[in-house]
Amino acid sequence: MNPETQYEDSVSIMVLENIKNKLLHAFRTTAEPRTSPESSADPFSTSRSLQANEELRRAKIDGAISWLRSELLEMRSQDRQLAQTLLGLNTEIQRLRRESDPVLLDTNSGGQQ
Image 1 (spheres, helix red, strand yellow):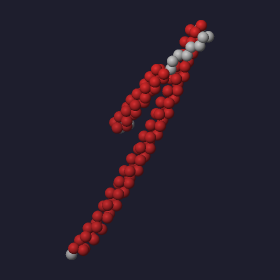
Image 2 (tube, rainbow, N blue to C red; image 1 turned 30 degrees about the vertical axis):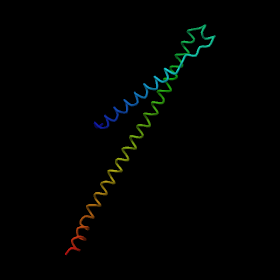
Image 3 (cartoon, rainbow, N blue to C red; image 1 turned 180 degrees about the vertical axis):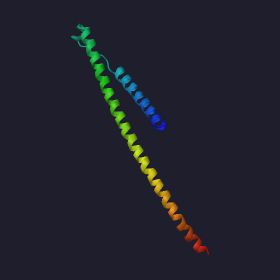
Image 4 (tube, helix red, strand yellow; image 1 turned 90 degrees about the vertical axis):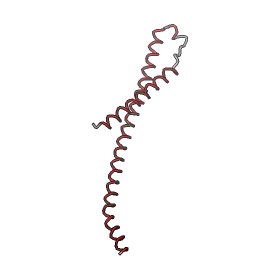
């Protein structure tokens, strides 16, 4: 793995961790415990329910992050393919310019003599 790829991986990981933290914070602050009259009688049941909800939220967040990670990897792959295509086109353009330079020089010098 070259240094540029390692740098891109590090940046991607930092971005995903930031998104994960924001999602966790958003779910944590918006989720208010819902207590019903029957659940207030059994605090253990409420605790298990809250724990299950938290685990479900975390699983959803982890799933979203996994999806984002796969999308970023796909985008990186497409980016590399596009870069290769552009480099190939640039090489072809340079080759065509080199081939046409002698023709242009012959045409310009022939008209001046």
